[in-house]
Image (cartoon, rainbow, N blue to C red; front, side):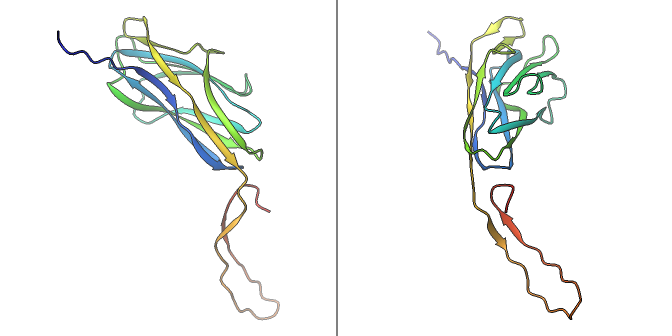
Length: 178
């Protein structure tokens, strides 16, 4: 019998660690076999710890129609449907089709970015308009309070009395810094 290789289709969202008060971008990736035409999904997350700022298609995916239900309608949820034109398929392999941009609030903690079926059902569909078996893999953002650290100290200056002096410092850590 000829050898057979079964490739699982996957939709996954990335994960990372960030200081509170900062912005983070997570990729949304598709692993496809070359016969898939569209995908729908919903993500749920803790809107106390992170706020969705944007969800955008990445460059190179200009022929995809993207419909979103954002956290304006559903705090802590994102619903998305991506569709190519009829009879067009995603290429074989892994593609980062979208970037999800979150802002970590001042509340630290672990934030699962979890797939679910509300408001949009998690489903990938082939060019024949039939659902195909797909694994949906959750991501996670871990936020932490990071104390300020000075990366570049100000340079000393000599000025005459009543002359203004301007100093600059570069620091990193959780926002707001105080």
